[in-house]
Length: 105
Image 1 (tube, rainbow, N blue to C red):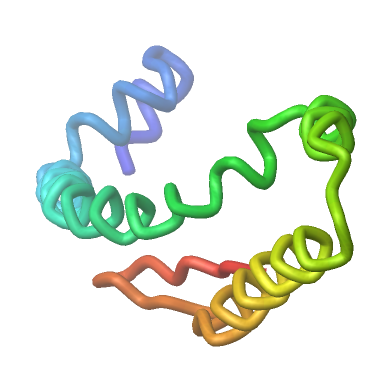
Image 2: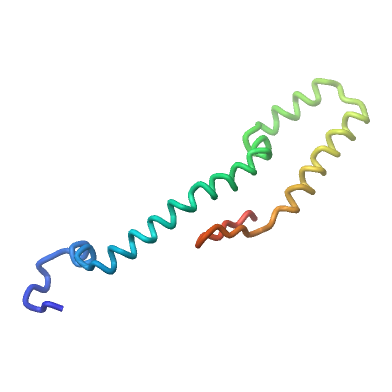
């Protein structure tokens, strides 16, 4: 540490001048960019469920009820959502990609 020039630069200047820190930052940045494609692919798997949070629940209910559904139609709709629930329940709660840990809960 150069005590004669202490306080003349910023913290960023001190960090940026340390070649080891710069190397580690570059390695970390490269690792994160390398994981990006894998993370995007993993997240794409969840688009099949996007209607659950993108669709207006009240509107979907009103559209369903406008069809004057009979008991079989109710049963079919119920089975559809039970199947989706079962499928979501099988998704692992944690998925690791490189140094990242993605939680699905």
